[in-house]
Image (cartoon, rainbow, N blue to C red):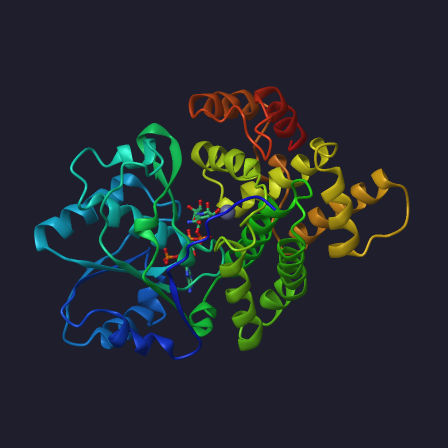
Length: 385
Ligand code: NZQ
Ligand code: ZN
């Protein structure tokens, strides 16, 4: 196992009815900005519940944070905070609202041009406003990590930053709040969480049996409950387990002390930046091709994945790997998430455009061994067609 420093200060308050706990979680004298998305939290009553729980505190609202949150929108929230001297942020939504709130938390007290926070990957962040979350979409794990991914439309760029200063202080996870999700977002969440686990698991053996078995448990749970979350949208236990699984898929624990990949995500971010696909759609396209083309470097873990996650035990090694890749693709497709560029009307002309984006963002040495160059990215992208 490699050396690691695992730190996660986010308090999780889980279960139905837990929004009322906001009264004890948010400081009594806080001047609160509630940030939300395009209106789902307003329509399904979550926002009203949140505001009721905040009681007599000074509360302002900032809505309209879009999926793949944009710098252009978030910068308006920064201005509002400075104008009204607000000092506590509460994100009510999915990964986009939470990521957007993390950026706003770091940008509000920042002296320079806030885009530098993204350009420098978060290293320039020395202060941030405290923030909490009310999660409405199990998917990204953003509610219990210190990552944020922001898009700047004018530059067609989607960049990530991280800082320990933007860990949420707390996150309220009420599975009832996911009942209003459209099937597409439920499926996206299952796929995103699955691939978060894969990015931290499907590398090379590192003598870390607990991390491996924990990752396999999360994958098997997603395979088991993903279809049920779609078939029975109001099954509380299924939604509760999905929520807790997605949080744990990216709260740092399974990745502690093991090599990590993240190449699928880096290619996926460029696809969203250029073509606007949902985050999970991009991952579902890239991962099967990535597994196939990096099968030599990932051979041992691919065979372990085949045996332990999909119970594939017969046939030669390459045949077992082929079957595991095919099962993975079939799983995504069974949830309704398509796995080829052609399904999204994207043709071969996309490949050079995506490679140029990767190059301009310095994504030229990806993967757990930093050996995935642009030539290999080209082969992966071509295999996605
Ligand atoms: O905007 P509203 O009206 O709220 O609707 C949203 C949005 O249209 C809707 N929604 C959310 N909760 C709902 C609901 N609709 C009905 N009922 C509810 N309870 O769902 C739509 C998608 O929301 P979004 O927040 O964009 O989805 P998700 O949670 O999948 O977040 C995706 C973003 O997270 C980033 C992605 O890149 C993408 O920008 N990621 C963040 C990560 C992190 N911080 O660790 C890691 C991930 O790999 C990912 O990159
Ligand atoms: Zn993701």
